Image 1: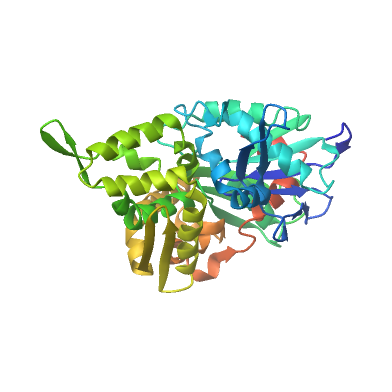
Image 2 (image 1 turned 90 degrees about the horizontal axis):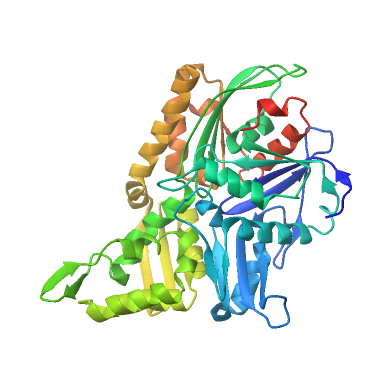
Length: 432
């Protein structure tokens, strides 16, 4: 990027997808589009692909977004495909990703991702913006999430991207976007369902023309969302065929295989990183001791053959189908597996019921922090891909009523609102 100061940008750096919007002085910021291999889109997949290249400095080249997917599909066995890496931003257990002969810290992965995002914007991000507003979760993903560590890593990732970097809760970005549609005062609950987190904000929206139109009242979040729902499908449909629940021999005892072998496999941010010598050696050792060695062999084959992406696609396809149909077929072939299973929406809802309960508790927490009852919420805005899952939408309809529910711009509303915040004089009131 050059040193010229361009308009403020809103950047929704998401677990699954990223979107950039550029402020233009109107209530409708411009969405930056990317002429991807398959189709031009404002949605840039939050993924990286690495491959060895002797002609590249350091011997390793990379791509991001849809181009990362294209590179992987062209050369799967020679690539390292990493997705959902935002999930480890707050994890003190994550130190680096081993990619061929190199190790990359989170901020290094992030910087490489940003580099490609800018280069694929067709010159739209050529001018260095004066201010960038970056969305962040209310609560980060991970069992021991450290928000201070995530902030430190984000600061390093975005260093040099713009003179001013501000962080704003993602649902507040969506709230600012939705408020631009309103013509009268309202108390607004925004529910943002991403890939790694579900976040909620309650905002008081004043009438148009008010100096400070939006006033945040509360925020709450939980580190689970679309990727967790994916993992439930993997746990039920795939892992039993890979040895989960099976046994292994240890001297004269037969013991259950520790669940830790399967935890990373069901996590998109970690599955690709399992393709390393240490993990594969551990799996080979387990295979030799397993009562059913063929099952562990199938897991090894999926890891060695870089089949995480097609598995992700198969899971995503059945999840999306269940948002519109009462049943769908799950189909995955590869690594010695040929799975074809009928999945009903009722089964899926049963599998994710504990997660939905935690989401509902989080909504209750946001209401309690704001000192409001459900009846005092005038509008509910649902955004993010998982907001399309029927059981998620039903949770809000039953609580607040169909007439108060609004949706739209599931993948772009956050970036849209962040760009608007980037033009605000009172940006400090929104930053977190």
